[in-house]
Image (cartoon, rainbow, N blue to C red; front, side, top):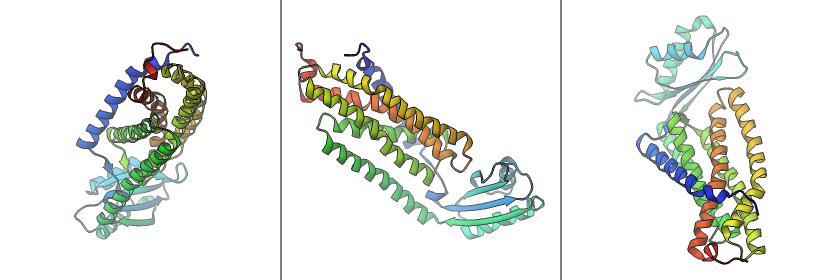
Length: 301
């Protein structure tokens, strides 16, 4: 058995996870998510300039003309002077709002060679329906994975996997609130991907612990957990590390359009790897204490 007592760190990390979870819930209930145009309605205008223009100048021009900007992103090639402007919905008719933005761009930045590539409108009612559908998509994803884990593992394992999934989703949402990121369809897609990604390491660790449990039935469960974690640790870090590097590169160099998507994945990989080691696994130990006396046996062969 390994000499490193990974299980000895469980109380510390359980406390940290509880504090992070409570903090995230408080942020979600008080400050709330910064819903983007996709979920609260508004307009998108894709514009290209023939001459050099930076994002700051474009944003400043629109704000000076009382346009409520949700976000401005650089898209296309580097220094291609092409931008995606998202305008939040207001009491004003959205069609008029879009026409007003186009007029401002042509009148204030006409000397930069304005080319309106496309305009799209999302009504407030459609945005609300999309937001509801997105929330249900996350809920059904978690339920589906919980059913899968429940069928694959017994009562000592399944609840830990389910709770770790909820832990990951809530804390990622808390980070988005804390950083002020706009919650849009891209970030929703990233969270759905993370729900599936996060359970992968947990299942691998659980399988290894269960193998040792079946072959060493009188060994205290804490030692079996230590052994299972140590044996899968290199695999966990290699898998998470390679994915983390790809997401970091795309986050830094992928451009503004996919920036928030890979930021969410980047944060989620860190939290998901952590939860597989220090949320899902301690819950196995706790459930063993509740369901059996094996983990606390004073005599072990």
